[in-house]
Image (cartoon, rainbow, N blue to C red; front, side, top):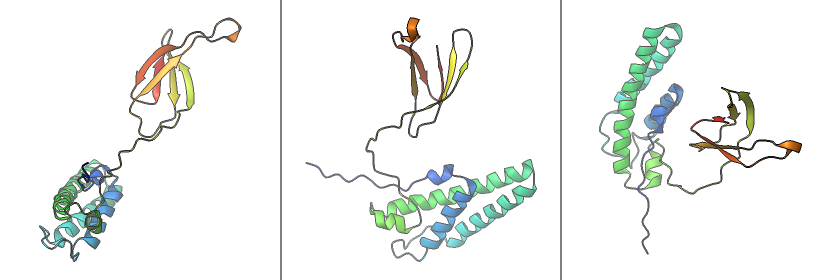
Length: 179
């Protein structure tokens, strides 16, 4: 029997996060990586990350006053900050040597290794609208961790008795077509 531990990885989810969350990750790494005895050969001085974070923070503030050009500038500064964070994440992942405590001490988060399945919530119908002839559109509440929605329907016969269930198709969103 093999006791293979999963390989720990630094989460790069910050790259998809909102601007202030990216700024927060940069601050966490600044506060925790330099001076940390677990990481003695950091590939850049802290001023590189600090400058990228500060320039990005200023660009976010300037964007509130500016227009399209200010937004483009902020996006460029965000990408520059993400490049620095990704380089540091790669370093931390290598240096932490599959030690979760070491990885987390850097200010970065780890990718979850929990792949246990859990039951999905049941969606609830929010609205039903008529579509094209013989079609209906159903909007249901979104369900976390759902990739596809399957719909089924039954026509109501005489006396309110439902007929046989029919396949209404698959939809990648919570707006399901059927009919």
